[in-house]
Length: 305
Image 1 (cartoon, one colour):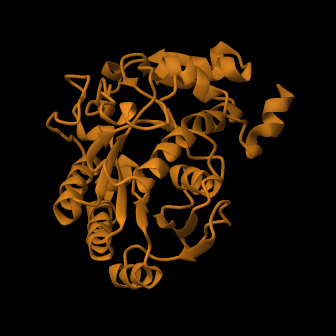
Image 2: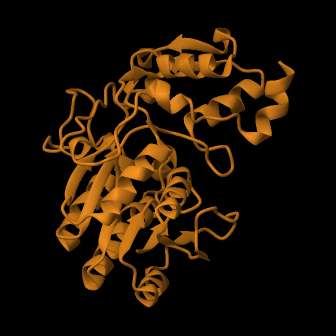
């Protein structure tokens, strides 16, 4: 199977390329201008996703069997400061890819977010109405609607939670960001009243490859880990996994930070029907931790303590 992958240099895109390679698929990765070589790609192409005409010509020339969209402007603060940029990447790009998938009769896998929900009435099933509270989550919800409208018979939209894993540059996932804080001699302040369902990028990637290979699982879908944990609990377990002092994290809560008032309290996802129909199984957080490594740029600090 020939697969076009956007966002190939990110945490999830990198994991997908490796998973697809293990299953003998040909993966053509679209990356930004300064991306390093990505393991798992048969071809790596630097394309500005803001130029939809160039993107369209490239996809049509490749004539893929599947299109996987991992590209996103996913930092909420950046989306708030530049809504037009967020709309281009988070709405217009997936809409264009959905139209191309319909034209090519290709599977379309699009990544959305648990943040389309407001966090007030978890757990959330695929049929629950979204209630986004930020530019990022509003654009993600809009991308879901447009993808399904443009290519309902080909599109699978996966809402995903907080991701962890080992990114190409060691700076994208939660444990990598925590290492950056700790290496500066700082303590990480993590919320005890904000609950997430963390998922390993490798596990999600395996599920996505399965979806590429099947044509009977379209529409809105949820994927996550099996454990619902506060951010503080996640931090504690990461510390324990790496044998670090528990003093490196401290308790905080959203009430003490008015700037985070719009953050969702609980984004517990109901993983049916997808979890019961794939060979890949959702993982508990303890199992996910076994895959995490110390990022290269922090190994000297880690070995010195």
